[in-house]
Image 1 (cartoon, rainbow, N blue to C red):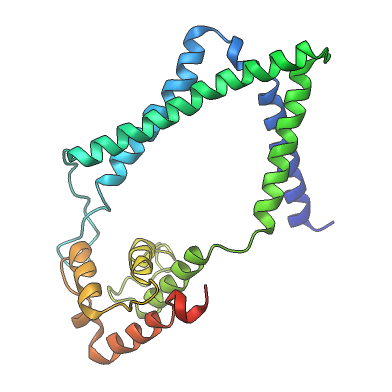
Image 2 (image 1 turned 45 degrees about the vertical axis):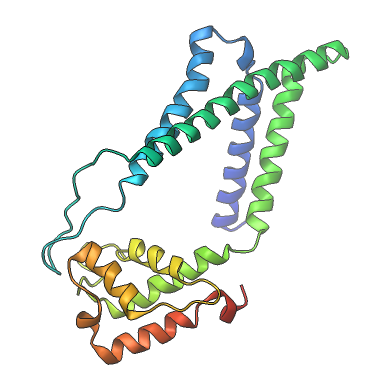
Length: 235
């Protein structure tokens, strides 16, 4: 059996076993502090991640070849804070509902005379985990992710900042954040413009993109980006 296939089978087996083991834990009967943490910690983490994401991407450097310096954290706006709290609240609600559902399922099985209900719950959890993993592996590649990767390939080829991604310790996906932002511009019925790319590059690198590439290279890049819009790619 090839090593990659063996590793995949081991990964699936370990993941299924772990999910089954967790499913056998009666979380609704754990001590109150543990249950509180089960609900509160994911909610706090969700709110925190949302607030950090609202800070935006690390800032630009003063020069094109200099390392990027992160901007300082700022106070979130009222809408950003409200959204973060709402997401945390949803996560807390989901956790609390999960505790109730866990108790309800176990109680239902006991009332039906099922022996060792936690074992059956664990096995069912493992089976669902395995099925969802296999379905994810068979699902077609996400079109947005594919488009972002194509944009990254173009930016890496052009290398406007002269970073030489993939060499001298520079990550191969050095331009990944920029590629993600540009991919968001590729929407049906619209085509990216030089002004949009210049503004994006100005925000991160303190200089527009057009002078770095020159008129001819910029035109070619815009043509290739336009060809990646959903209406032209059919996805």
